[in-house]
Image (cartoon, rainbow, N blue to C red):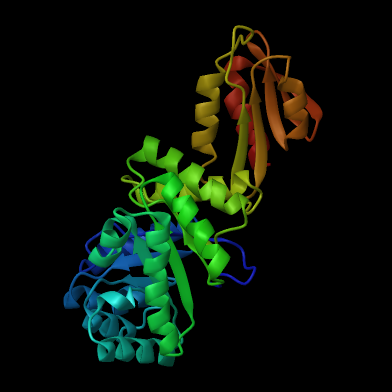
Length: 335
C-alpha cells in the first residue's frame, strides 16, 4: 500500500481487540478490510502481543503496523514476526544503540517507521519550553525524532502530529509541511464519541486534505472502528479525493414536504452501506429542488403528496406510490 508520492490517500484504522487474542483480532481486521480499511495498526503492549503478530499478519490481506511505545525489544520482535511497518518514536526508546538496532532491522526488511507526535505525550523539555502543546512544540518534537533517524541514514518515514484540539492539529501540520517533505498521516487524536468525534475529525482532516496535506488518514472515534472507515471515506468523497460507495443527496425537509423523506433517506442510507461502487442517489421531498437534484443524480426520487417520481440519469422511469418508493428505488439501484 503506497503512502505519499502522489498515491491515492489511504484509509486506516486501529484494532480494538486484545492483540494476544489472535482469533478476535484477525476477525476484526478482516471485517474492517471488507469495509474498506487499507492499513491496520495494532497495539503491542508486551512481548506476548508482539509474538502474536506473526499469526495475525499471515491471516490478513492488508498491511499490519505495530504500534509500540518505549520498548525497543517489542519493535525488534514485531519486525521478526513480519510486520509491514512500525509506529514508534525513536527518541523515546532509550540509548542510541537500541535505536540503531531497531532502525537496522527496519532497513533490512524495508519497512517504514511512522513518527507519531501527540499533544498528550510531549516531552517535559518541550512542555517547559512552550508551556503547553503548541503547534510549534509538536513540530519540534517531530523534528527531534526525524533527526535521530536521518543520522542513521533512514528516511522511510511517515509523520503524524495530532492533538484533540482541531486548530492545534491543523496548524501543526501546516507548519510541519513548510519545513519537511515526509508523507503525512493525518487525523485528530482522541476526537471523542461518534457525534462530536465525527465533527471534529471531519473539520480537521477536511481542512488539511483541502489544502493538499495528507497521504493517509485515520479517524479516531470512541466507537465501532467500522464507523472510522465509513467517516474517512465520506470525508475523502466529499472533497473528490476518493470514490467509494454511495453519495446520498437528501433534502432537510420543510413545510412543502408531503412524504416521509427523513425516514426514507435513513432507510436508503442503511441499505446502501454494503454498496462499494460510486453512485449518487437523490432522495428529495418536493418540486423546488427535487427534480433538478434527481436529474443530476445517477438515480433518485422526487416526492409529491403520497407519491414520487423515480429518475435515472435525468429521465423519469415511473410514478411510484409512497409505500413502494423504497423497494422500487432499491430495485433500480441494484440494476
